[in-house]
Each structure stands twice: as structure tokens, then as C-alpha cells.
Length: 121
Image (tube, rainbow, N blue to C red):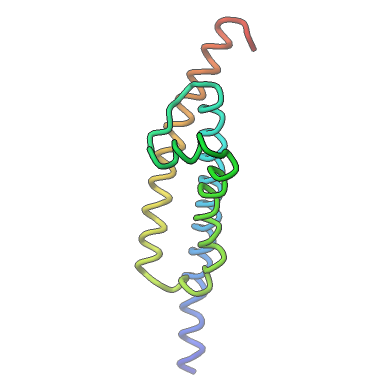
């Protein structure tokens, strides 16, 4: 009976964790794609010196690192899903990625609105 109660309590935590993972993956894919776009067209500079070096070395390695870390968390989610520390770190990463996404959206909108005003689009 106690085991059933514990299982019932873990289900909502697992579901919340999985939604956080999905959100993290979506934000990281958006970050990688928009960063690549901005770097290719000279709209931005990579703020992270390590990733700037990786990008100049290999775009494949850039995507592998940018997407590999969040996807590795998906691979290990069954081991870490019940850790409060991991939940907090995941929430922090989502907030950080969301801020970066807002920054990317800002310069994307600025770029495309400028292009539109010149009649290029």
C-alpha cells in the first residue's frame, strides 16, 4: 500500500521532468539553428569563446556539442528524473535558454524588418 502511494507521487514529477526535457530540447535546437544562421550571415558573434572556436573548426562539431548535451540528458533521464537538484538545474537551464531565445528573436526580427524596409524580402 505504501509502495502504491510512492508510485502515485512520482508520476507527476516524471511528467513534469519530461515536459522540461522537451522544452529544453526545443530551446536548444532553436538556439543552435539561430546561432548558426546569425554566424553564417555575419549578424552576430558567438559570445562563448569555446563555441566560437568549435564553430570555426567544424559546424558539425558545433551542432554536436550544442545538441549533444541536452540530448544526453534525455538518454539518462530515467536515472536522474527524481533528483530535485537535477530538476532545479533543468529549470535554470530552461530559463537561461529562454532568455537566449528572446535575444535571438530580437535580432532576427530586427534583421528581417530591416531587410523588409529595404525591399529585399
